[in-house]
Image (cartoon, rainbow, N blue to C red; front, side, top):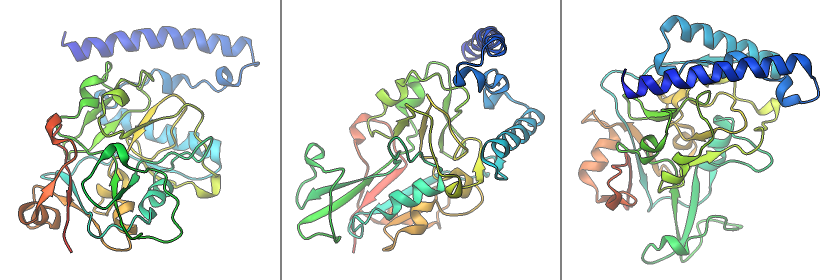
Length: 304
């Protein structure tokens, strides 16, 4: 038996045994809301990559029904597959970025990021004094009445969608992987909260839900993807997916669309005529921490 199949078999066997005990406990006591709200089907669900098309379809319908009951809104939960001959890449013009952080909050809204107990951000905009980049002296939470500020420049950082992603290698139960279009995803139902992926990521590109995520019902984005912005749960790791619910349908990620100065570029690295490919081939680009050999698909450049 292959090692990954063996891991999958052992995990499912353990979870089913545990789930039966939890379900029995839920029947006997109503004291704990965590036990009362226990979802057997979610708990014993197969890894997404092992599911048949029919199983995926049933699972998506079950989730839509579950979210309707929980939030009182009609959700669309998709599992749109990668497009053929597409590998997504990102380029960011640091000469244009003004540090307005509109990308940060567009991402929060689009991807149903938790607002409480603290607001989760997939994108961090770091402020530097003009001169050499020193990551140790950056400011993540600067307070500016007006941007851009004289004597400063800004470097947004998010998941770098690495081809050799350390987070993928670190996951002990294969709950995170790289899709054919280059997007690194997480199966939330399989995450066991070990946070090894967070420790392995050199870009701080992953976030952990220490508490039950909270999004006001009126602000929920109901157009979702199973591997992306569907409602998450407590004790799982989440991350940027290049807005998989948008990009796989030919749309820009929310951060690209909202940028008021056009600093963010996104497209197909395999298409020689795409804007992002042209930038890589004609501009002086750099990638963060290239010496780590993670091979990010997120490129930075300076140009007027």
